[in-house]
Every structure is written in structure tokens, then in C-alpha cells.
Image 1 (cartoon, protein in one colour):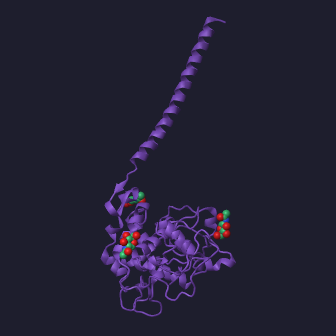
Image 2 (image 1 turned 135 degrees about the vertical axis):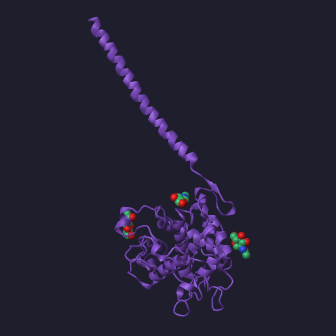
Image 3 (image 1 turned 180 degrees about the horizontal axis):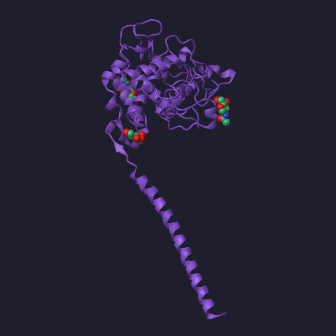
Length: 328
Ligand SMILES: *[C@@H]1O[C@H](CO)[C@@H](O)[C@H](O)[C@H]1NC(C)=O
Ligand SMILES: *[C@@H]1O[C@H](CO)[C@@H](O)[C@H](O)[C@H]1NC(C)=O
Ligand SMILES: *[C@@H]1O[C@H](CO)[C@@H](O)[C@H](O)[C@H]1NC(C)=O
């Protein structure tokens, strides 16, 4: 080989090696920078502490419920609850609501998104509560929407709602599992699950939900924040839009919004049946509260109803009875 050629080869080899090192180095640098960035982002994710109401979570960095929902507003939304004809006089109050909410605000309950979304979620949750505890149907002044929190339990249950086929939460001798609470709980297995959720033995003591308003609100908020089944959204996630519908959901017309919360909580007893009264009345409570809170019903959000949605959890014909039941 000629010397010149050999030198050329050496130069080329060196050049290639240098290039390889350069490229490799750049890739490594980019990768390191990437993980760095991720790490920095993680350590920069702000966590806030707002005392007893909200601590140790990014959600606490936003306003908390007491910043935008005061006693007078609670009194305004549930104005008729302590009139003599109401059925739970003296039971429900603002303090119980806020005490219960403090457990769920760090998880994003009414602390997700901006101020408007937070107020919308409050109205959505209370819309369910108001509709399910109203006693104004047909009777009284102001219409049903003015009569939220009129009940704290089902008035004349015609059964004990004990389903013996659910062995995980077997009925306790003497306990009755009729509807109680802010979003009424029915059946032994629903009391069992809610009790596990809020760490109170509701299976042995279902009566707690008509004796203690804080517990009644806690059970309702737990239901709102917890998916009925794995891989399904909670009502909270469906409402604030952190839930991404699957293709099956889209085909079933299930999209984020107030409509999906009714689908999750009540399924086919309310949804997929057109604009039936049972659905409309829940929506009217939601919108009544939006108006009273100054958000305005024009901000009800997309997909407000579930008139055409297929249920998340269709029941087989034989377990019609097991569906979470509505109304007091
Ligand atoms: C807090 O509020 C801001 C808007 O004010 C919103 O962009 C942000 O997503 C909220 N934080 C959380 C954790 O939801
Ligand atoms: C209601 O339940 C809460 C939460 O467990 C408890 O702190 C409170 O003392 C109870 N109130 C009454 C009157 O028993
Ligand atoms: C799709 O939705 C329908 C109706 O809600 C349901 O019966 C079916 O099991 C769902 N399929 C899947 C794969 O989730």
C-alpha cells in the first residue's frame, strides 16, 4: 500500500470514529437532558398546604371550596330544608358539607381546573344531591329545585334491600339497607363498599347515614370520586374531563360532561330513554344551582344530558333490582 493511501485510510477512520463519538454523545446528551427535564418537572410539581381543608396535593394550590362557597350560598341553594314540612329538619348543614369535602379536595373534588370548572363541579355534585333529596315534587312553592336536602332517608321502604348473593358484604342481622344519605345508598353491598371507602362500618351501621350529615356527605362524595368498576371513569373524572372515552364509549354516545355523571350513578334507570322526567329533574337541579352560584346555566358544559347514551353497566334482565336505585 502506498503511504498516501494508508494515511487517507487513517484519516477517514479517525474522522468516522470522531463522527460516531459525536453522534453517540449527542444522543446520550439528549437522553440525559430528557430524563433531567422530566426529573426537574417532577420535583417542580408544586404541592400546596392550605391547612385543615386541603393539604399535601397539587389540587390544594387552587382555590378551595370555602373560597367560593360560603354559608349564605349553602342556605340559598337549600333554602327550604328546615321548613316544618321538610323531613330532615336540622339535619343538613354547611359545616358538615365542608368537613366532608376536606377529605376529597386533595383528590381534586371541586379543586380541579380553574375557578369556573370548580364551581361547575360543585353545582353538578349538588345537583345530584338536591334532586335525590328533594321533596318538592308536585306540592310546594318554588318547585322541586327549591326543596333539596328535604330528606335524609327513604320514607316508607317496602323491603330491607338485602341481597344474600353478595358474600363480600353479607347483610348483618337486623340491619336494613334502605336508601339513606345525600346521594342515597341502597343495598347491603353498596353500604359495604361505601363503608370501606370512607372507613366507617356502614355494613353494621347503615343508620349512621341518617344520623350524621358529615358521614352522609362523605359517602356521597366517595361515590362521586370512585369508579363503579375498574377501567371506568368516576363521575368526577367524567365531569371535569380528565376521562378519555374509548371507542366503545364514543359509539355508545358516552362523552365527558354532566350526562355521563348520571350514566355512572344511575345507568339505565335514567339514561338512554330520551328526555324523561327522571333525567330532566336532575339536570334542572344542576342548572338551578349554576344560576344561584352566579355561574349561569349557559355554562352547563357539553354533553349535559344522557338521553341517548347507552349505560356503562347494562344490567341483565334478572338483576334489574340490583341497579343503584334513585329517589327517596
Ligand atoms: C388550578 O387552576 C388553574 C387555573 O386557574 C388550572 O389551569 C390548573 O389546572 C388547576 N390545577 C389543577 C391541579 O387542576
Ligand atoms: C359524625 O361523623 C364524623 C366523622 O366520622 C365525626 O367526626 C363526628 O363526631 C360525628 N358526629 C356526631 C354528632 O356523631
Ligand atoms: C361496549 O359498550 C356496550 C354498551 O354499553 C357494552 O355492552 C359492551 O360490553 C362494551 N364493550 C366493551 C369491549 O367494553
